[in-house]
Length: 344
Ligand code: DAH
Image 1 (tube, rainbow, N blue to C red):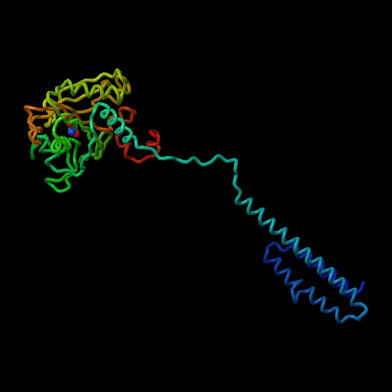
Image 2 (image 1 turned 30 degrees about the vertical axis):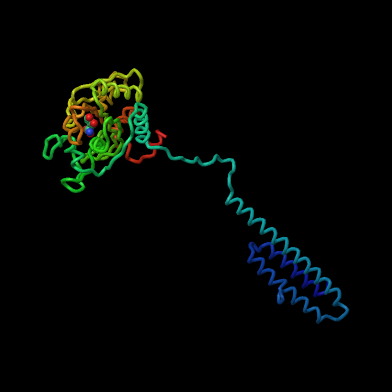
């Protein structure tokens, strides 16, 4: 075999071997310039053919061209192979298992207290009460004085108060101030319920929060009696709990009603048997109520000799706790989704 052929064979073999070792795009590009580029090994070889005796040149030229074809074909094949490998790797690393179940989408829900408030209002609306709302930042006048609680009166101890601007501007400690606000702007008859936030400056524990919701109720008309008050509240208890639930009214004191009462219901959790929630008494105190004090009516320009009324106030959290067997009021505002999601 002629020396030129030996050289070409050697070059081709080396090139093909190196090509199999070139493992990525830049390596095969370097390979291409090294062998097939203008000053690559094969081009130099072709140029050296010119120095051969003229009769040997055609065969050597043919052989070199064949080698060039071989190398170009090998390059193209290797290039494709590497592209496929890269694609396989990407598919492997980014692969999506379409058989996996989808991630659940968590939809939000209403807060349990919102549910409770809506239910309470719905029941009173059915009985002909309107719904009104009022300010959380309130005047001492409406929160206390209009309700027959004068400054310095010991009854104020019932409501530990956050003052915004002492002594006259505060965060309302109950929804009762809306009684006076509503009566001031309406003529009797009045039938209204008022949901809203209340604030009290007190230590938190399982049954006390410094912010909570109340629903206030007020009815003023000619000739209302305790029987009307009881009728409305018993009807309410029967609907929010169950139709045969037992109720109990006992004397209580609130400066803005006379007489004043508290209504208890048979414990909805143990149905009166006695449990942890009702402290084994079988009864749960649900709300305060009474016949509107004549002085409150007079404070808003109503004549207590012509009209009278009844009022009541209940804590929404308390009703939600009793209804759902929640034993700590703080759970409602702890923002723990594991708790809140139970109610959606
Ligand atoms: N406002 C009272 C409280 O927060 C509850 C209350 C008692 C409201 C008797 C009333 C009522 O309207 O008549 O403790």
